Image 1 (cartoon, rainbow, N blue to C red):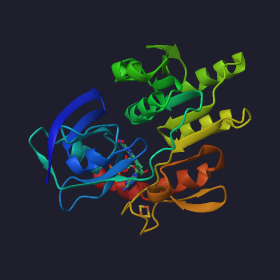
Image 2 (tube, rainbow, N blue to C red):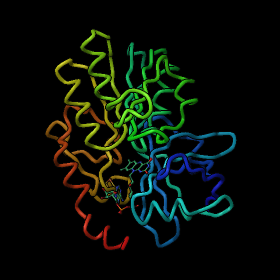
Image 3 (tube, rainbow, N blue to C red):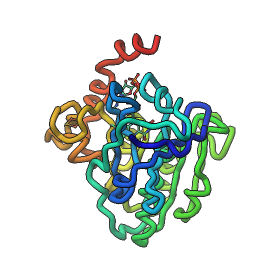
Image 4 (cartoon, rainbow, N blue to C red):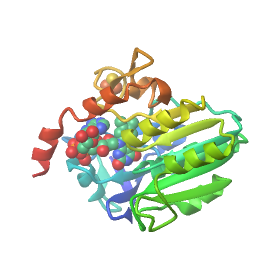
Length: 269
Ligand SMILES: Cc1cc2nc3c(=O)[nH]c(=O)nc-3n(C[C@H](O)[C@H](O)[C@H](O)COP(=O)(O)OP(=O)(O)OC[C@H]3O[C@@H](n4cnc5c(N)ncnc54)[C@H](O)[C@@H]3O)c2cc1C
Ligand code: FES
């Protein structure tokens, strides 16, 4: 069993969950995720490793409460236990000094960009972090972003905090101004990642997105997470989750993610 060490509400629908998982923390690298089962009968649910502490033996997830499994997880309190934490899974990101790296985070990606930014900064990159949210009160982790970013840009859809608009709008404005960006990493909902890819493609800026198809085993055995990247079939759990965003078949990803939506709604009734 894996003990819950912390549960903090960071926005009205997102929790920072800290779980004791020393073996996962010991090997974790930026870009990876873990699969978690709240109890022996739960679904196996993938969560991005948004932080880890090798000494404390803990891993941190940002969990957006969207349905049954995420609700079951965020209901746990420090001292409670989860049945399984399997990881780290997925390919670590390729890290190098690319020059200027732009990160775009939305939804749980506000946590997911943290290890990416830290690693890219440590490799000598200039890091610009764009974090988008719907409204005031939906941003968190500013102190973390500031620790690795040369610039942090906060946006809200309604303009109630930071610049009005989306991260991608501000990135577009910067690119139009002639700001040099050498690599982009996007973590969040598929629509945000898709429009980021559409923006950067004409500028020929290598862009990576953390794909989030439905996953079951997380080890390349079941095929549930298959997606098309550059006309090749890939398994997001073992070949990803980060892929060249210009090559992803975004419409297929959207359709596959929605495959069980009616059943998921019924479970939550
Ligand atoms: C690599 C990866 C990393 C992720 N990281 C995070 C994260 O850090 N924080 C976070 O809150 N969410 C993350 N997700 C999404 C998270 O797994 C889903 O929100 C969760 O599975 C929803 O389960 P549910 O029962 O609460 O909701 P449901 O009502 O069952 O599902 C809501 C939606 O979530 C997606 N989903 C459902 N089951 C799965 C599954 N087994 N695998 C993947 N997606 C599923 C589907 O699109 C579905 O329509 C990640 C997904 C992937 C693939
Ligand atoms: S989740 Fe089964 S192959 Fe990826």
